[in-house]
Length: 369
Image (cartoon, rainbow, N blue to C red; front, side, top):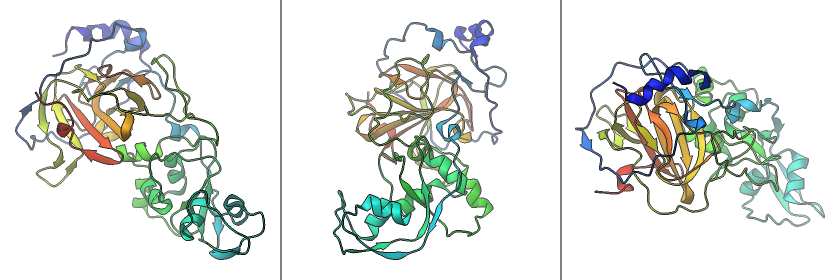
């Protein structure tokens, strides 16, 4: 049964931009682990009620997600045309005055691809008369605001394959003017499964391919202070430079599924914590919101927060989302309210902690009490 705060829903429904229907989910299965109590943390004072927090809670089956009005995700805001240039593998003799960037522009290949093929390291010095291998393939010219997800979808290939083909690494920010190698030879058929994978979102895909390309010399956007200010989808976000202090627990509840492989072999990249509906979900540390939405079907209402030191926290199955992409949040700040959206077995929080792209068992990083 919901707490008294839910009675506000009828009066405040006009502020809700619209509920997103939850996906069909399988019949609940029993937890694979015996429930384990989660130690209670010293809760941060809950902020005073603000207009941006007044979002109606889900009704009916409690599987919808209430969200503040927000622009389309960055990968939908800037369309990508599949206009990659086919480049033949060749040798290039460096001319007087050439730079690697000029060679890339002349041949149509990417600077990074040429550098890797010739074992060049920054600042990529070349000399007149030097013979360089130009790797062949399809190269997409990245425009300002385009995301890795949108590029992968335009060509129907999984973003993970684009990452591998280009040896991309942290922080996975694309640059306007960068030439990205697209896997698969020109004209090669793309299977239905591969095309479906290109349109499938998960946490890793959002973290590595969800930010828009930046323009040279242009710094990522400064995080906004309030959910009332909406960051443009074409603006890239930036995480804090350092992680201040230790993490805190996002909720006080009972662990019903642990990190790692489950009883049937499925992988769980986080933990699941059973809690009552509409429980405040708090940020575990200062950070910048990288994603808010419900486009990962299994996780339903989802918030992803980037912290300093390469850490990222993930909060899924929410019923109400209270922050916006690009918003700066403080440790202990309420960023969502719990629900049973997505493939939740009960009212619960799916919580992940990642260092770079690697999921880490949250119980090894959160305080023990």
